[in-house]
Length: 214
Image 1 (cartoon, helix red, strand yellow):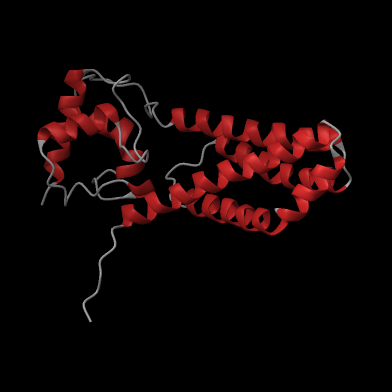
Image 2 (tube, rainbow, N blue to C red):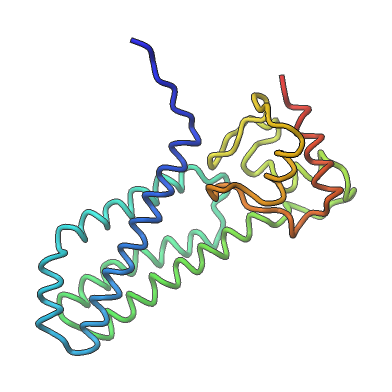
């Protein structure tokens, strides 16, 4: 039987989509439950909780499992990401107690913590755009690559962390390389560096990336 090859990037993209979908659904369910509780609609709250008990458990598991898996694909786990994880894990028991006891304060606190956690995630993502250190030669492709790109691609361009491409096997043309660096990936696994790097710097990185090809 012929083996079907599934690219590593496909797994990353699929897990990201599942994680995003489960997070959004999770937040909607919690928002509805918290709103019903705060508005004093106890019967509607009880009914909604009963109907969505099993779906909520499934979504919660997907949310946590995909989140943990995606963390293993991140090359650098910074302080903000650690804080986010702690906040999310702490919010879950607070939410369970709050909803079980119909405690408005605890339910509201849990909702605020979850929203804050994803605010921290966005800040953490922006941190990935920052260079490792100050550039000594602003137009040196190798130095720019080391400071901005090696976090995911590795020093030799083959690390493939966080769903990144293996440059030793890449065949994309110059225009595609420049566009990817400037605009990022359409699937969101690579941030856009157009606001951090000049056109000259992007061109320099593009030329350096091509040296990894075998």
